[in-house]
Amino acid sequence: MIETDYLVLGSGIAGLSFALHAAEHGKVVIATKRAAEESNTNYAQGGIAAVLDPADTLAAHIQDTLTVGEGICHPDVVELCIKDGPEAVRELMSRYGARFDLAADGKIDLAREGGHSARRVAHAKDTTGHEIERALLEAARQNPNITLLADHMAVDLLQLAKYGGPDACFGAYVLDRATSEVETYVARATVLATGGAGKVYLYTTNPDVASADGVAMAYRAGAAISNMEFIQFHPTCLYHPQAKSFLISEALRGEGGVLKLRSGETFMERYHAMKSLAPRDVVARAIDSELKRTGDDCAFLDMTHLDPAFLVERFPAIHARCMSFGIDMRTMQIPIVPAAHYSCGGVITDDLGRTNVRNLYAVGEVAMTGLHGACRLASNSLLEGCVFGRRAAADVKGIQSLRPSQVAPWYAGAATPSEEAVVITQNWDEVRRLMWNYVGIVRTDKRLERARRRIELIRSEIREYYWNFRVTGDLLELRNLALVAHLIIECARRRKESRGLHFNADYPMKDEKFAKDTILRRGDGPEPA
Image (cartoon, rainbow, N blue to C red; front, top):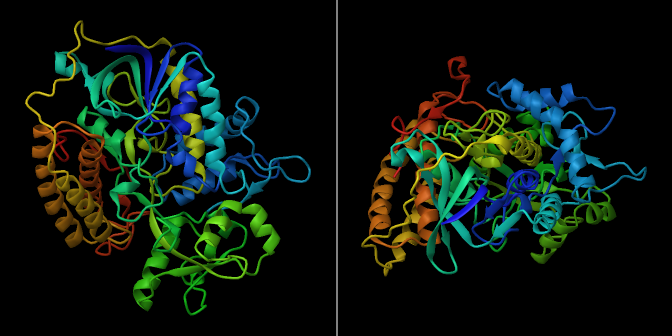
């Protein structure tokens, strides 16, 4: 048994922000299931949104967030996060050495992205997340109070309720992927910073680690989950058979990129006054609709009217990746399709990251703070992780340990090593395909019902497999993936309207009686096992 003050699951901006601040008053263990750099943060291209220009206002950023959130943002949380934003971004630079691009006058160069009324996105070329991850990881590795454990994946949370106590968390069982042993980590506070759920879908911009582990573990432990129906599909993912869902940043549209069909016709003016700069949910549905109408495989993003030297300077990573596939965005249009990108729902927390399970916190994409509502404003995600990671770290300082006198170690029972790994790969592919086909950009009641019936059968097969064979990283991811797919389906079935990222063709309009969060708790949603 390993004891620490704070156990952090995940190593993106939220987990690292928490760890660096919490290390000022306690020992921190960060468990991350692959390399520490492998997180959604590391792949974020566009930037981090904050009011850093004197000509911009907090009120405008707040209003943009509320507008894109389609009526179910929590205004108090939006105001808090936006107001904390400038200080959080400046700290990334001054304290941790993040290097954002500077304008000719030496001030931070600010970009504009979809849904924003002003240029307020700080960036490091088109690899902003990578630069933030680099800076925070470097600081964490130099901190004597922080222990980083790569290739360590949480299996389940340790629950005091299983020892006859109240709903409280005191750590987690963690699989050491190198040794295949499950270790017991006990902590005063446990922080979920596991990121998103993109791998629930067949096509996603997310890395392979984004298998919704934190949401699944929290739900099994009794934490309330909310708004999982609001999955953001990024409108512009590179369409190429070997590109593996490479993201084409929204910043390209912010700098003047224009969406077109294969015929060369523009189309966004038919869907929104902001045209190619419309919010992501609008753009993704528009592209989906046009592709179904025309029968084309993809749409295109045209940058050829912009200065070629500027494109290479501003977007070096995207330019290089496109060139590797024979696409020169200086002279050729970029083929794009929508792909699953970001989960606006997650584990319900207050404005300090606390869940309804005592001593269990959630920060970053795994959390549902109320900031994003029904659709996330571009580049508010890195901001949320940074702001709430810091706030949670301040809150845990005086937290009291809640744990039993004796902690049971992990017990594998009669489980044996698996000799049928094909069961995992088959179910993995089936979950992701049914989610793409039935619970994607456009949904219907009939599709959702088909998805529900099929996911229940798949989960029963996974449950039987899980209890008969020893755990592996692949099995744990599949178990979590299938449960969260079920949560998304159930949330979508309960929202009988279309709002933000949730579009049901049977209910194409908003209904004000649904202007509220969709909440699932253990016992009134899918079975958690």
